[in-house]
Length: 368
Image 1 (cartoon, rainbow, N blue to C red):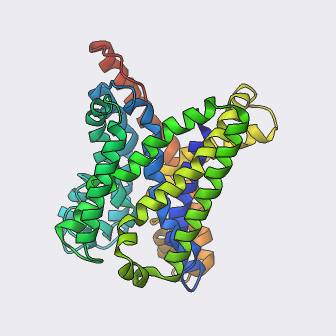
Image 2: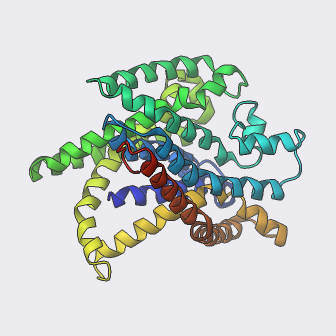
């Protein structure tokens, strides 16, 4: 197990949370505002997690889709209904609720996409990536297909983004927030997998050198992007349309460069931590904390924009850092409850149904 990935999941969720709470914590643009790019980190993680399956050359679509459905959808439905209960009925009426439940809320307008919960915009993209996985698995059987696909997807993204003016409602905008525009970020995660495997087999001296370079390079890239975003903002993007077009991709690349050494470092200690879970070593505690953050990450991501509204309904005077801290605590508590009562049982049920499908139609796919 790459428990560094679980840690990264938790960090990504907390980054997005902090970006949405930033206006309660600071007066002007700060690094917290840049943390919305935690979504790009999520895309890289998804690509990495499914890379072994994608590069294996074989997948059984139905069992895979069953597992993904029960992993993603039950908790998402509960979150959608929670936000629907919290917010006033929108002008679109009940159709907005149905659009969200069908994950079509990013196909009509910005207002609809962000009405219930701004974080919901990334869920349709994730599902679209899942739907592509059987086709990509078949495609990646050919040598260099991954890199050619990545190159084509980068070119497609560039065309889409350069044709989509900021704040537009054009077809180009909608293409930019779906898999047509986001695929390169997933593929960066896929490409990270063979790189990590190669470094894991390399001599210790080479591994240390390249992991160090990767970490430094990733931090420098992310630092430069964060500085540009905080100091230049939309005005800077208007002057540099190419940077705007590939900003998310560059963030994804920066996160991938940081993830590589993190995965290798944690991989080397995860075996000991699993074999000695009761030990009070740094590795054992790191293992536990990483697994906890990873298990709560999806619930945190879905619910963090609901908790401030809940708190302000109970205490209208609550605001500023006190509201942000209270919302963070409530989000963590809700995330723990939702994971235990809904997310984990649904995931296990999905695995059970997937195994039953295997028993009926054994095709020997990868089990994710």
